[in-house]
Length: 151
Image 1 (cartoon, rainbow, N blue to C red):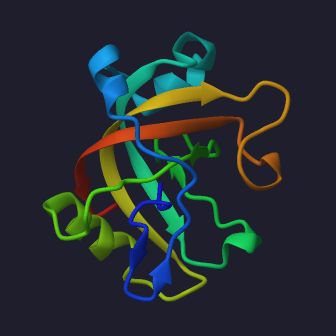
Image 2 (image 1 turned 45 degrees about the vertical axis):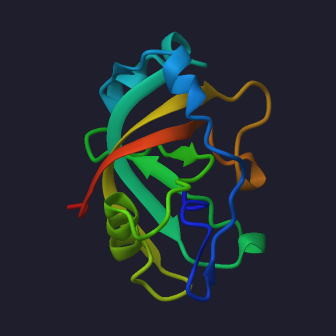
Image 3 (image 1 turned 90 degrees about the vertical axis):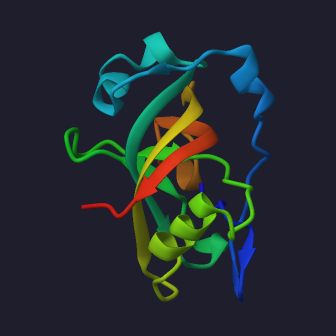
């Protein structure tokens, strides 16, 4: 997901794909508690959902991995790859908050933000997702609804 802000200042962030907002019009997302999503992943596989989680972005060279991921404190130990990015300009309200919470750190450190968003949930079949197939699940975010400082 931070593949999120494309380029801000001298910090370049990889974008693995494009946001497909038209999917929101084709699929009405249902709100799903993040931990419930992970308890019954096959039920939500391929579906557009709305949920909230903590987004973690590591500022480092792409070759080193540095995949952006989501987690929730109520279901520790499970990380979900955040596949694509938020493509709005960093001067809109959500973009400003993402920049503030995620990119205020130095290279090699992680930025965190609590987000509510809509996205497509996917379960890995065979190989995992991300660097070295490290993730069993991924979410292709379609829209970020709100951003706040993570606790």
